[in-house]
Length: 231
Image 1 (cartoon, helix red, strand yellow):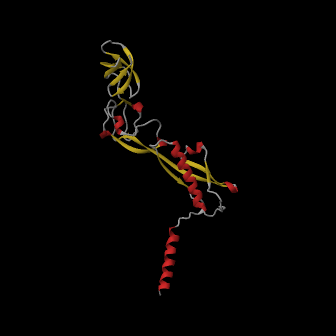
Image 2 (tube, one colour):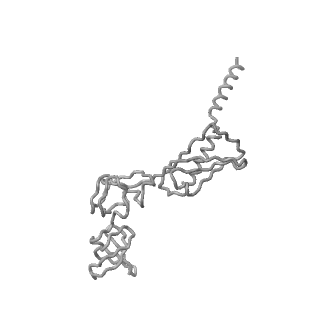
């Protein structure tokens, strides 16, 4: 009786072990090779903020795929990698066998958009904005990924609800604003006031007028309502 019980346990445990083995079919290996190749290449080429979704088409089970003594190799053109559908050449190098597999790619990134219509000259705040993920193909220029990046910015034109916000639509210093002018010389910081003669974002160089001297000079926007000049 003990021998019989031992044999039954051995057979049962052996069956469980076999079920846990994940041995992919050659067709699945080809598909997985194409997907992994595209995922790795795009991870190298795209910014960290980009979210990737990569799906490879299934390989027809009726196709005869020869046994390969080495892992399958994959290759795609740089131009193909920039498209939503990437054609990947999967091959078995020792046998010169190859097959083309289509891989679908979705690339999204966080983008700040308006929740409500915004009028020109409006000071933006969190109640008007939200962050959503958008397809890169829908974006035509640079955008913002964080609402905090827009703190103190004003709209230069009317913005539609759901519209991605672009730097060209904003100003942190707007034409006609009273501004603080900062300058450093000999270790001393000089501060005076002026008027902005142009719109500008953080880092932009704009034309301003110094109230004290009435001179027009170039200055760099360093904060909301603040510019810096060199002496």
